[in-house]
Length: 145
Image (cartoon, rainbow, N blue to C red; front, side, top):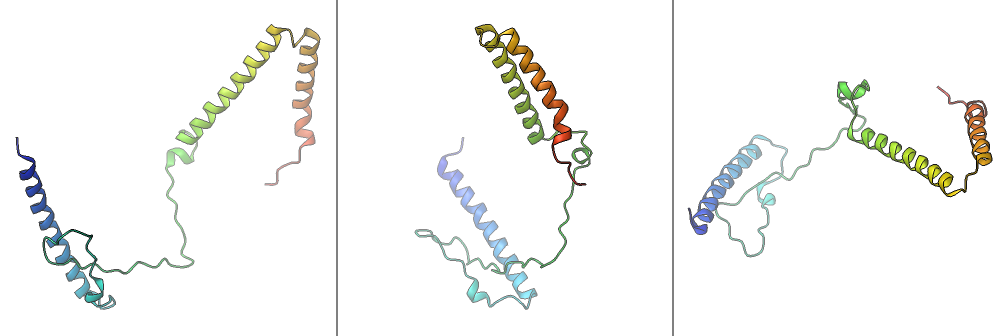
């Protein structure tokens, strides 16, 4: 098994090699593009207490500007857009609905078992609920299409 110092030296050597390749790539790109600022202004500051392992890294500090008014294309998964497949948010919504329905059923069972919901109250509650379901589509405003 390698000693931790050997592993760190190997890691440092590989990291220095990558830094050298990246700095060469950045210099090549800055030479190819005339719109980039002077490479002297692009030196990255070193963190406190760290010495550079290789020559300085130059990276272009130019951010791509978004085009104003450009159309946004949204790629949709054909399975989820057709409704044949459930994604995680709709699955959680269905589970939540199931738990709310179960909670209502258990609440009614407890009220009947404890005597709070007498047979007369059960009939009135059933009739009121049925009447509400019957009248709701007629009394609610229709959605515009």
